[in-house]
Amino acid sequence: MMFLIKKAIKKITPDFILNIYHFKLALLAAIWYGFPSRKLKVIGVTGTNGKSTTAAMLAAIFKEAGYRVALSSSINFEIAGDISKNTLSNSMPGRFAIQRLLAEAVKAKCDYAFIEVTSEGIKQHRHRFIKFIGAIFTNLTPEHIESHGNFENYRNAKLNLFKTAKGFHVISLDDENTKYFLDVPAQKRFCYTVKNAALPQGISATLVKAGDIISKKQGVGFLVNGMDFFVAIPGQFNVSNALAAICAAFLQGISLAVCERALRNFSALPGRMEKVHDLPQVFVDYAFTPNALEQVYKDLTSRKSASGKLICVLGACGGGRDKWKRPVLGEIVASYCGQIILTDEDPFDEDPQTILDMIKGGVVKKGFSAINLHEVLDRREAISRALALAGPDDIVILTGKGSESWIRLKDGKKIAWDEKTIVQELAKKLRLGQ
Image (cartoon, rainbow, N blue to C red; front, side, top):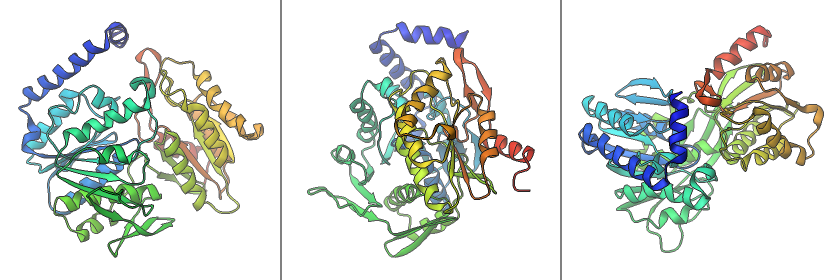
């Protein structure tokens, strides 16, 4: 009932009133907790994809350097080694929650805090009254367009973090939106690239490149300034995430050797290209944007055997969110996968079948074989279908949920969910790998 009341109030309240409300709530939260960010060094990470992994890599590097750290990401919260799962509906906590986390970090005598900063969080002023010493930009592709109105507004929300964090900026050169972030003044600036991009003319920054990138079954290797690095999670996109973290570490006086040790021991995050079963190999990943989905499929395609195929389970978020991307997701999955199982992700208050029909439109547009396209609304049943279809040389990839704890339905209802556990339960039931 409370969910419905809040939804109704939000619908009828003018945007400028909501904006004032969010701003004043952010100020009140900061006052209530005594502006804790002034007693920490806070670094914000923003972008469309890679925020959680980059923030976690930062935490690992700074801990290896001997610092006490706090972390707020869509996956976990951490305060001086005390880790808890993020079970909130928001990747970036609300104003009181984020200020409380920072206050607890101060109490635990943390030196640094790393915060995953989202465009929705910025729109609602959750970043306000947090003293950021630096900001990191990973990449930018269309997301939350309905909420922001257009892509330019979405990008401007991300830029607001950089206008707030005037100490240092770490910016990827491998994104077409880079120029907008380079236009924001900073005391120090590092740029990084995995595509051997050059600094734009007239831009003053330290450039860090990754060379000799080699994808392996266990992860990915690369060179930075002549030093060998290895990260035990697959995907070239994780080299980019690692470079972002390395640049921020450089700016805080941490050596390349410390970064190498930390990243060598860095393990896969829950729900981020996480292998949850062998024979067949089954991966769980959070990817829900077209760019992230394609990167995941590209990486797994490069690692499967010639006789194997990708079996892909996916859906799309409901609630009117980014409807434009649904047929695009369909075209992408049809381009890489041998078997497709369309299913629920988080339908919210939309008709689940309508969501699947929109994705299916993109699949059909690519001329994908109808015999290899399955529609199973119940996600557990969809996963069971995928596992039953898989041979020992195939790879099953489940996207859209990652490590999320709930599937969200209409009227605020939700059901408990643990994708990894469900895969393992079903694999055991089907006697896979035995």
